[in-house]
Amino acid sequence: MTFKYFSQNGALLPVEQAVIPFSNIEYAYGFGVYETVRVSGGVIYFPQNHIARLLESAKIIGLEHPFGSIDAERWTKELASKAESAAFNIKMLLLGAARKEGAVLNIFCLNPLFPEKKLYKEGASFAIAHYEREYPQAKTLNMLSSYLAYRKAKESGCYDALLVNRRGYITEGTRVNFFAVKGNAIYSPPENEILPGITRRAVLRVALKTGVKIEEKNIPPETMGDYDGAFITSTSSKIVPVRKIGDFEFGPIPEITRSLTAAFDDFLSGCGGVLS
Image 1 (cartoon, rainbow, N blue to C red):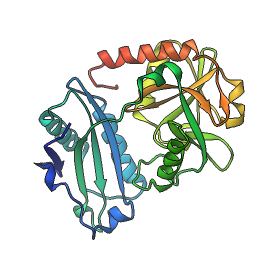
Image 2: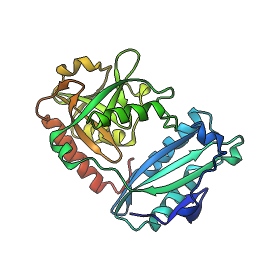
Image 3: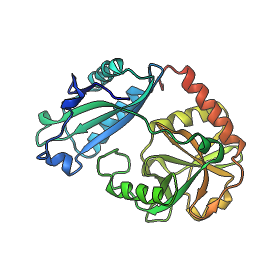
Image 4: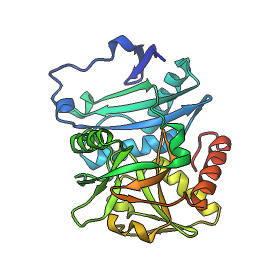
């Protein structure tokens, strides 16, 4: 699907004008933050939460700008209304500048990259990459190491790579959040050491309502045999079971993963895009 328009600082412009000059040193050096928002069936999912995280990411890295959440949400809805597609993603790209008045908020539409359907039934394989992001709670453009880890994982036939920090614990994927599963409980790496995904937050909300126990803990990759299974979450993939991590392979997908996936799909169908 080709999209005709994008939004720049609130102005709807032809997508042909969506360019960044070679001289933009802030973009070249990764001084920017971004968000990806899911749109399906006319529903924009969790725009307020994504925008809040965008602004928080900017604050974490000291990126000053003149934009507020109300305007950003209005511009996002205006752009979405121009898209001629039933399902797409909206990307928000906030670029810094030498002065805050020079910051630019670009909002544009993208075709989503959905996982293969068989992964939801069979589970996905993940490589291991020893790396931790400098600002784990900010979604910044400084993604070179994550990109290289992701590319290497794809070259080896994996869906993504799980990042392991200097203390030997799994934190997250290059673009996903990670959970381990045991019995009626799900386990997440400590939230202050990861990017707290919006889909992750929604899944945790659903898990609580369905009586699933939730615990934060450090999870070394070599302890995968202590768990019944694992899954990942992200905007485009929702919940995908994990079949293999490195050389370790799980057994059948746990029932808790399947039931949580079904409950989350039901939540998405009825929430109207709002995560209270």
